[in-house]
Image 1 (spheres, rainbow, N blue to C red):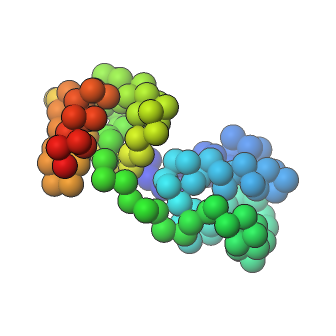
Image 2: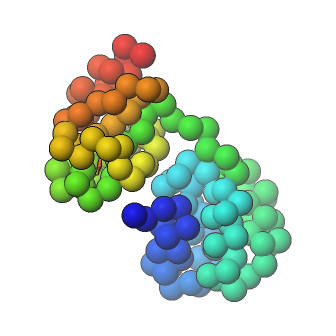
Amino acid sequence: MPHEIDVVAKICAHHNHDPAALLEILHDTQEEFGCVSDDAARTIAERLNISRADIHGVRSFYGDFSRQADKPKLKLCRAEACQAVGSEELARRLSDKGIASETIYCLGNCALGPAAMIGERLIGRASVELLEAELADD
Ligand code: FES
């Protein structure tokens, strides 16, 4: 299962581990997780072979990187079974509508994907419309 470190490592690889792309890497990381956590910063520093102080400098200079995610209420599974039934497209459409979601890798509801969770409520066969209605209900 991919987790934060793997995803951040992939983002770094996508930018050819180029320290000049640090800002884009931070942006991509923030977009994926809603923040640039200390673990993410450590991984980026290792992969780009730069110091954590460099990252800290950029992160503080551009105040729009938070260290902790303001956790969105909505969690969206983007693991394999849910991907196979459209979770990526769903994530894209939600983000187009400005609805923030936290990526989760398996909610244990694989048979009813795409799976989502709002608070403690598990939602199967999620669609943008269904999630909008559920969020409005919340
Ligand atoms: S893969 Fe999405 S709930 Fe398991």
